[in-house]
Length: 102
Image (cartoon, rainbow, N blue to C red; front, side, top):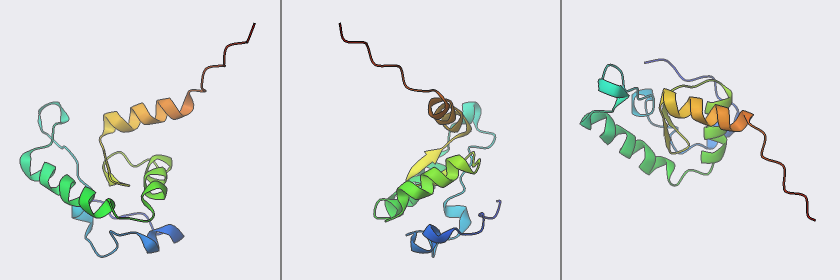
């Protein structure tokens, strides 16, 4: 597994600080359709349980999306490559203009 990126200040307050990378950097690998197997789903559930009480979960997810992470659990969200692509497209799409009142 890849090592985490050096810590910006918020990571010092992250609930996952004492956990190893293998608990967080979960990839679907060679599973059909990118699905997680039972062991991977259990790891995602354990990671999400830690993230549930994390004071910096929002910053964590924002960091993952901004820095190009394409998998793993960030801010309590399991990011698959497909989900990351969808989130990035949504973030890059400006909101629709509000209708003009007549």
